[in-house]
Amino acid sequence: MNKPVVAIVGRPNVGKSTLFNRIVGNRVSIVEDKPSITRDRLYSDTEWLGRPFLLVDTGGIELDADTELKDKMRYQAQVAIDEAEIILFVVDIREGLTATDREVANFLRQSNKDVIVVANKAENHEQAEMDKYDFYELGFEEIYLISAQHGLGTGDLLDQVIDYFPEHEEDDYAQDAIKVSIIGRPNVGKSSLVNKILGQKRVIVSDIAGTTRDAIDTYFEHEEKDYVIIDTAGIRRKGKVNLGVERYSVIRSLKAIDRSDIALMVIDATEGMTEQDKKVAGYAHEAGKGIVLVVNKWDLVEKDGRTMNRYLKEIRHEAKFLNYAPVTFVSALTGKRVLEVLEIANYVAEQHARRVDTSVLNSVIEEATLMFEPPANKQGKRLKIYYGTQPRVKPPTFVMFVNNPELINFSYRRYLKNQLRKSFGFEGTPIKIIVRERS
Image (cartoon, rainbow, N blue to C red):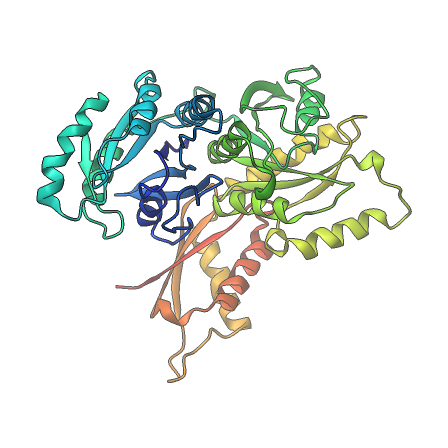
């Protein structure tokens, strides 16, 4: 599913980050009463009334006589316009309409995006009702009065936001096509890998990190299987994400992961598994996507008889949460083992969509509880699993009905997942276990 992107824009110190935190429900964005605190873009998956979306908090658009103000303003506003389906244009109702607000509005009015003016800091509702009419000068139909700090009016605002979401948004591909996203940091060889798989120069290959700005879909067939490859822009470490286009390429990559079934996580063999690699793969893991770890540039590594085993051991140590993901070592430059990537992706796709017979599932659960007794609380009350079902695939999701969901701990949940993998495979795919009390 391609989640809508909602961007929060506006000049500094109008409460954008406070609104972001209010909607997300966590204090993710730094909030301080100083202009330009939010230097980098923050994003978070969130939802309202069961409708998921990607929320983006942007840095403030600032007028400063000592800088190239209008160019900077146009650049930042245009990036937000390009990437978001819906724009929340935040203004300060207490300070009133400013010249900067008018400048931002000039850019937003030229877009075909839905823009909602959010008049923040409206704790004094009666006064705000009178003051809001000044903001109709900006040329937008809707102005919502809120107090992000106190949560006033944010529910009504979100009701309006989700009204703009499309009811259903499906990609126009064959139903059984395997959608594969190519993810990873810039300059690890994602575009080269795509080109080698396709046998043609479908995308630009360059040594300059971040060349691929957009997600590019390529539909093709291989050995009577239909595939869609979604090549994404590279995801940089946070400290190096300092240009608007590159910052927003992260959003494109996350959207591509959301649309895919399988994520090929490309790792640079000359650098090994980095912290940013783990964060990128972690997003795909949390999104429930099948994952293949592709160690590229293997031709540049000096090898002996144990090099591959050492690399594999290091990867497993660095990313324990991906112990289910197969690892393959390739060279996109020479083409070595590149086509094996498709074979592995196809196998992982089968595991990702695997459904288990209910009777067999419950036999495995029963045997698992006999082998390793379920946990008990301090009062001696022990967890009892009555039965389990598998309501969903992609990823395989199991619901287990128990006497008390609070009795299951992380260790036993992990044990059950391991037993499911031991019995049914599920290589390359996360497994979700939902525990419910039997009514």
